[in-house]
Amino acid sequence: MTRLPVGFRWTVLMGTLAALGWGAPVDAQSEGGEAVAIVVHPDTDAANLTFNELRRIFRGERQFWEDGRRVTLLMRAPAAAERALVLDRIYEMDEDEFREYWIGKMFRAEVAAGPKLVYSADMARDLVTVIPGAITFVPVADVSSESKVVRIDGLLPSDADYILR
Image (cartoon, rainbow, N blue to C red; front, side, top):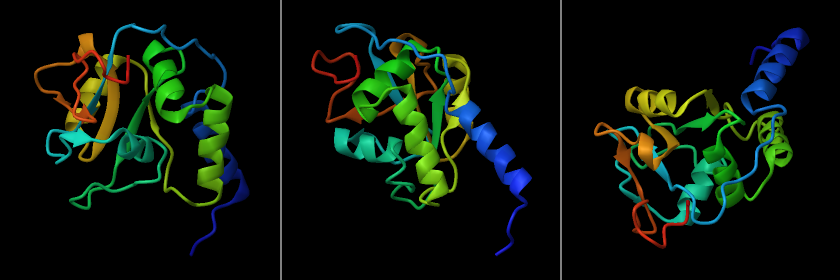
């Protein structure tokens, strides 16, 4: 295995810190706010995930879909309210804990890469349709006709008991 120069590894780490949202914490949405839809690449077989499966995917504990494709997690930038909701409900972490979690996973070589940073709901929605194996979250208002929305525990974002609202 080829070892990368320390300077290069440091540059990758700093880029990862930026992608994980170094700084700029935001508050989670209040109870009863706009729902956040989980969206996957159209060719992904996942139509329904349990909340536990969703948590394992977002935490990098499950890195491949049933068909063998690698999961590519697209994560919104720290200023997004939907990111705060996802950190609160799925990760049960704040921004600092989230950064430490992913940095630790990468240093222990438990994942090949951390989440990919996207700067807008439009960018997340567009990229998830072109990156095989991609998964992301967007406000329900930003779901398009090309989006493949995944049910969580059999529920859609329009259902009253949906967990991501």
